[in-house]
Length: 534
Image 1 (tube, rainbow, N blue to C red):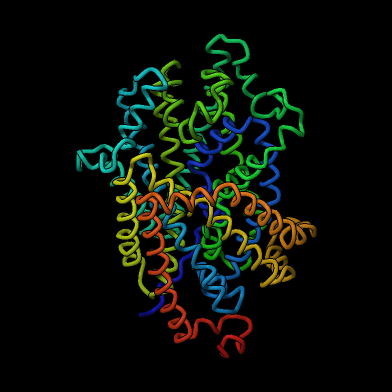
Image 2: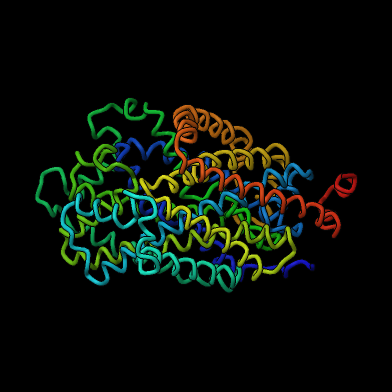
């Protein structure tokens, strides 16, 4: 079997918008506003901005540079790229997680994408008039089958959620089948501007609401004070920053919303030309994602929650979760707004667009690995991946009681292993590949001056910050998760599925390493004699 034809981006703008699209998703418009609302507003923003500077910027630079370097050596999959960085087989094994985790995230992320599509259609048909937050909560619970496993399948193909899921799968796999330039890039060139326009329209509408409830302390100005003032609740500045869980959540949000550690950026950057400017491209993508998250997501959703629900309702006890703000609290808000059904449609259509730009990006790392590892074309790799992911999504849909399967997938793939993958890749870039070579690669073709202190941040500050935050996060979350594995059969089944994926792709990697040596692809590495000796 020959190697698949090498793909490339059509333009630098295309890859920037594609990376932005991969980052801009439900994390920006649901998770981030929910965290701001439930973590004290301004008390969350400071740890969040620190995490952007210490984690997002340096790690993103490292990922862009590492991906472009690996691409210049003939690899687009993260295992192959990590092999080029380490010049040892262990590098490929460390990169394997960056192939498996996006698959697991896609499995449950696409289901939430289907939630957004159903809600958007319901608003478009003017059928969302339930009134109270409790009514919307009860409706959402019935819709996703929160009370009983298998409830979603009771209606079969006539279930709105299952029909929406089929549409989401069709859209995602059609785009990924068309490839890097004709599929992902063309869609993001259209979808990202449309997404931003929709977001700005919604934000302008929120700004012009003033004080719709006529209650003191619930105006748009008050909502901005809530979001940006860490002492609004009467705490001192230091007291507001003393909660370690807030720092953990802020770091996790940066990973999730900026796509750090997913393997997405590395894979996308591998399709760039050798001297393309990755330094300014990285900052442009980060700035674009930050604009969508902070300016559009934060200053649209959080103010609406403050104005209509009040400060007292913005806590974990009342909302239940960050997820609840979008699907349970905001619909009751739209009921009270003029042209609320139209605003609701625009909001959930915005979420759907953002979700699609992210979900197609989660497919590209495993697609690249299957193509490179097995030497097959995009059509076979897409069919292969469709069978795996659709099986997993049906499992998550069936075990819908309390969203236990979805929650299990999200914890291990969307939280636990993301920390590990980000830490591994920054250590490889700064310590194994070498910070001098790494900085030279970041600066190659750069049209901006990359500060010298970034080398110190990449080599020491970011890894230390990650290790400390991850250690603290584990101490809080891991014990109860292990207890759940021991006591809950659905959690066990979900873990078995993820373990099975890991074993299956490990076998592919074993075959891929033998195949790469046989076809002498590894001789493209710098230390030819080192690889040949293996």
